[in-house]
Length: 352
Ligand SMILES: *[C@@H]1O[C@H](CO)[C@@H](O)[C@H](O)[C@H]1NC(C)=O
Ligand SMILES: *[C@@H]1O[C@H](CO)[C@@H](O)[C@H](O)[C@H]1NC(C)=O
Image 1: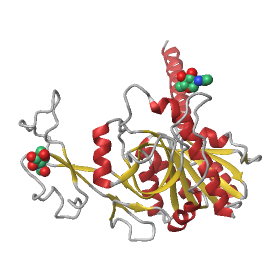
Image 2: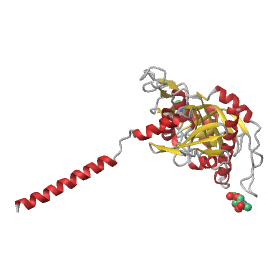
Image 3: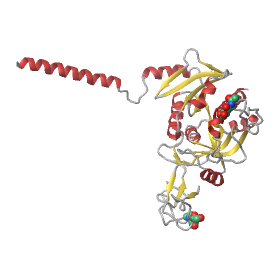
Image 4: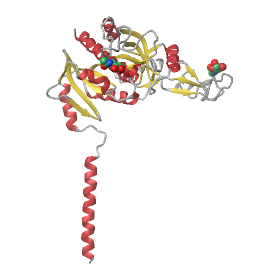
């Protein structure tokens, strides 16, 4: 009897420990496996590479499908940390391309992974964006000189105003330098100018950054992050690029899209489909493209001291279009293609 129970218990214990071992073997910790690091080392022997960073597959596909892109035969890609690093060539440029996924966190960490693992000489970021500039149209491709993250806020308590210091401002954490959005007269039913609510002001804050060659744990601040001077100068030659104006045989834009260098773009974890906020961003910050990733890529490149430029085509009016014509749906593929066409041209300029 007793030994029968013992036998069952032993079997149970054995099964349990096997299960524990199995779980330990399959639960990977975040560290990159040695075998993968070996391959990274092999890849880097072929470097340096140009890094291409793109938010999603809709924006990446036209590049992967382009005749100019030649996939690396031996190793078309390496998968690391939930990201796929595509290896290939465009003309003479050896490159590694990574898709980040939506928004600032994804864009930042995918860029950091790319730059920490691989020998990258510079980063070209591309995709589509909302447009806050009434002088431009859908399909136009923009190359801003500065990017800011406009989603880091200090939300001010009711009763205080521009004359009042913000919390943590004295310690240098926050600042009133970049201005605020006064949403005090926001109303959930109708605009009633006479009845203010408690929402007050949100103040735009710079990011805390830790550049690679500066003292660790000593923060610096960055709001407007410039793109690489040389890349920006080079991109002047992109202006005048001919781009198609029709989504199909019947649906066309009023004019051919153009490539323009602009002053500023901004990013935040907010999809802006709102004309009032779009106009605010334009009047406050003088931005043209409004997206959800570029500033994150810019901030990481700034910290790792890598040349960076972003090429963003305008796919919609960020809530400023007419409600009837859903311009984004119709012209987004054209915009995604335009961004890729301009990136390809930029790469040829880089190596020529
Ligand atoms: C916010 O806007 C309202 C309406 O224009 C104005 O009366 C108020 O003074 C503003 N508040 C601040 C803090 O700027
Ligand atoms: C062109 O695109 C528009 C908008 O998507 C669509 O309504 C129309 O049917 C398309 N025309 C052709 C010829 O495919």
